[in-house]
Length: 456
Image (cartoon, rainbow, N blue to C red; front, side):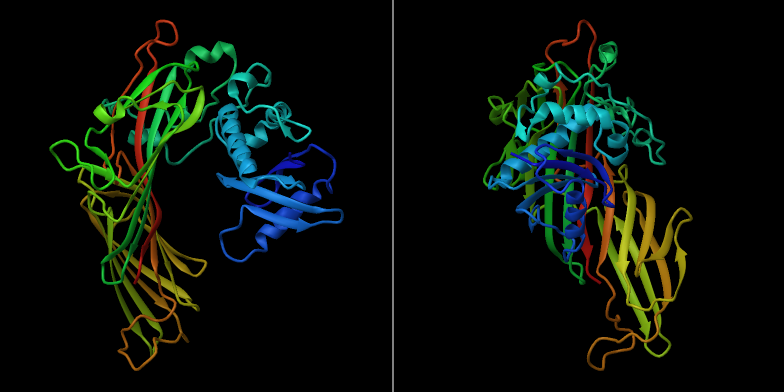
């Protein structure tokens, strides 16, 4: 049982507020939550917080999704895990009905969100989160806009129908609502399948690898009628655990794997095929993890060189970034973030290509590279004036790095690439679920950095 539910923007602005029981201090509860959240030390906030109000103790349980805070409050002693599951399910439902979950889509679909909350929760008690039941009661249509984007995923062909990479879906295609007017159902005979991996790396100052971790998911978004059977074929050399070996080539190994409850595994052991009958909407078909052993080289290597003149306070940093992806691959939206010592007053730069950009921002050097081709090397020479900063303890040479420099961190996206090597061989629909029309099938492979840190 919950008392209130509200959605806040990343700046704390209330977008949605619903009081189910009338036992709180009104909208001031949302302000109290954000004030306590921003007052906590560090970047990671607890998902459960307890406050002592004027009448009773109140528990705040929240998740963060696409920069939004989805918050439930209760004064009862109930399991926080059940509320976290409810918030996660609400985030999925809002994404299915509005097309995507973001500040803009919530603001445009306020009436739809309140109607959905009225059907899901009654006096704070959960009635249903089943889309099959909700679709019979929700009458409000989603308001969908087509926002302008400087980086259109369709321009680089991230969505490809199986092996035909020339067929590209619009970048906004997977952000449409799953449910809308009946007249539009004929245009939504589509299935989107994403293999998304998050890469975490820690590299020592001498270049040795200290830590590597890959967290992967296979995500499905289906516009087909619920119960439409589909089969997903994975790489045949896919292995779970270090002892298992398959095929004659190098195996694609992961340490752990888990599947959605709707996935049938009768063909997985023999042919690495996942069979399922998913409902309309989004679901995570499979999750997997790989640690300490990648089948391919790291996508980036950084070679820094630091010279510092203690007398004049002149700091010179030379950075050479090497991309070890295959020559036909590329990295997009690459950004290097390098913390600098306090007191930086100027920056001069020499970059190896004109599309690069570097600037000082919030006490750090930010180096942006829109696109990096596999096998290429890019470099930048940065000179800064940082007077009055201490050097490392001891006599040391004049060229030793000053305190407060580094470590460097990289953020990037790798389209059509998985760090684990896992690929989707095929996505098959044995039957035509919508009359005689063949459904469109889009498959995307994407890796991006989660925490890619290089010590200087």
